[in-house]
Amino acid sequence: MPTSSNVVEASLPNYYRSLAPFRARFAQGNPILIYHKLGPRPRRVRLKGLYVGANLFAAQLGELQAAGFGNGSLQHSAGPFQPGKIVISFDDGYVNVLRQAVAPLAAAGFKAIQFLPANFLGRQNEWDVAHGEAPEAIMDAAQVREWLAAGHDLGSHSLTHPFLTQVPLEQAREEIFASKKKLEDLFGRPIEHFCYPHGDWNEPVRDFVREAGYRTACTTVAGVNDASTSPFALKRFTVRYRSRNWKGLKAWLAERWAARSR
Ligand SMILES: [Zn+2]
Image 1: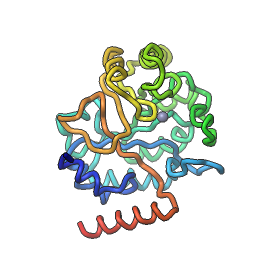
Image 2: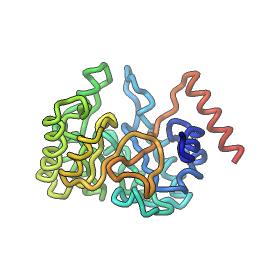
Image 3: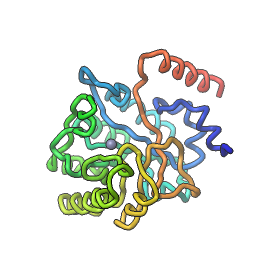
């Protein structure tokens, strides 16, 4: 049986682009946004929507700021309810985020968290490239320090970005424990938040995350969080640039319609 929040979720666009369709939903709990890549999109990219232009990103922050949203904390994402708070998260640690996000985040007074695949610092998104995705540079340690110096936070996104339920348990454990230690040793700060690569998790994987000493873990399930949400299965709304195809156009029209009829 669908819960009432599932019903609300079903009427929302399947990606976040602007606040209007989400305003009522965001008022019901603690929302988290996920971004991946910012800035101009290179040629031959497969998942085009995961590149959000820098202007759109700045516009989205401006809209959140104008609506009175400020920095939420992952620690409190599963309750108690923090009205007017939102968490901005970035997955994979791309250099383009460091280059494009720091100034608009500062201008809007937001702090964000980057989830890093610890073995890929200074390398590329090799897990995606293996499946035909365009390469994109991941921050090296010096660039991560720039990100931290701007006042932002870090979390672990495993060592090598595997599907954690599809590798042997011992490897899943290592990905979760060793990435925490590696990032803590490199950057001299506690790493308290985990993000499941590909949003892939099950109970043993979640238990490793808890045992390793993380305080939260993020999924890619859409929704806002409240006191009924496990801190180890936090929901997030994916921010996507609108794809220019028929399905994208239909979603856009539905989004406009929902915004107008509010
Ligand atoms: Zn990822």
